[in-house]
Amino acid sequence: MDVQPDSSFAAIESTYIQGGASASVNFATNEYGQIGYNHSNTTAQSLTYLKFDFTSYSLDQIDAAKIRIYVPTAASNSTAFFANLYGISNHSWSADTLTWNNAPNHNGINVTGDSDYWLASSSPAWDTVLAVSYYDFDASDYIINHCASKIASFILQPQVNQTSLTNGASVAGTLSSEPPTLWLSSKAAGTTPTLTHC
Image (tube, rainbow, N blue to C red):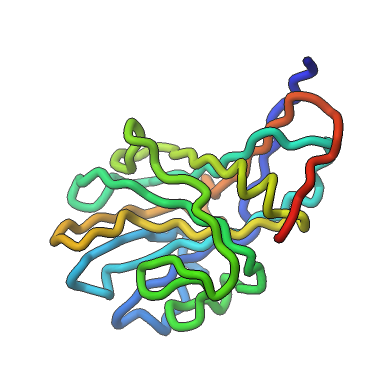
């Protein structure tokens, strides 16, 4: 079996949106994004949007894909939490204009379906978001089965609960030295996979 080296693609766009008093604010010029949840304070709720272009990927086959993010500071209140990565089919959004009020595929902190969306993966139990570190999310199904255009958009969502638990963290964005990265793996050059929907 001819195992190919992984190929990586830095995000071409990233930003975050924040509710409450910041619902109309655009954060595209910030070096770091945010994900955060507070049941009683919508201003402390935030989602991060990511966009990748892998049209230059030259191998015939994709066998696995992951998104790697970097958290540059410890999680809020030193509280470990799960994060969810959703793939969405809407790629028309622009980081330069995105706000809580106009962003696609969300209703408050919840990811919804005004266009197609898929839960790509969640933080594994052994790797919850807490310390300064890189965190990987499996995006294989979304990339292989829903990305014919080789453009991929994601929403990174913090753990949502109906308690007083507050969680959140900063996420390095495209303007940082550690931008979000899409990693693609191929075991062998072979039949082109059927990429659909995106």
